[in-house]
Length: 335
Image (cartoon, rainbow, N blue to C red; front, side, top):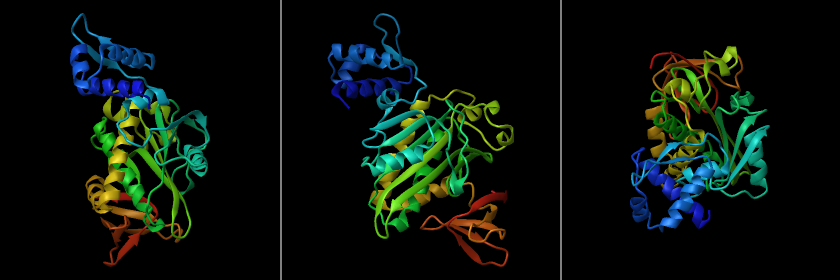
């Protein structure tokens, strides 16, 4: 970012922190050590990007009266508080798959934290090859390139890191009941709000890169979903009753993800697992698990824990405990 755009981000962050309380130009300049001319340039720059910065009368001060709904780089960068994640954004109006594009960029040398955002995906996918349906213009389709220093065997931990970040952001932005359905769906009352898909490129002992794909329903209404999905899907707008500024949600999500990735790198999986346990709706439930390697032979029992690798532990009626690394989970009762 340039010095001018750095100023834009600092001014915007200060105004957002004031929670619509007007701040005088003098206070802003003093807090940020900015010349008056630089403040006015930043206000003009932010307004040109779609940020509604209002001057509340002579001498009253400035406040943010509205945020742009777009997901372009110029609309998201002033909202970012990250060091690496999202600092380089690749915006696409329409694309087959943000994950595929992120892999392509990574193979061409994209750095840790580069992200792909799309208004619309024609071939978005979820876990186990399923299609991810997201109403265009009302959702977030985001894929982030990571270059972790982890052995490939520990890569599944990153899925749970991302699930924690998504769930916390959803709770903060209007869905207080958001919870994680193991391993990586975020739901509200059993209706899907967000999904994640983690893919990696690695050899036997080294990860080349990881792509974390995140799809979140933000401003969709009931009518925006196909009829067969309406009982199964929800959005932040449905949960909160209010429109969600998509750029702000994206920026806050990238910030949470960077924080949890940093925690994971510094302290290992333990803190992530602890927070995941607090956020999951699966542990303590009776579940039905369809496992790919045993088609047609479901595992039914009580989900009792998430272990130190992120696997789900399921106790069946015989008392045996099965360790589930992957599978389709259905919550039956309890919890």
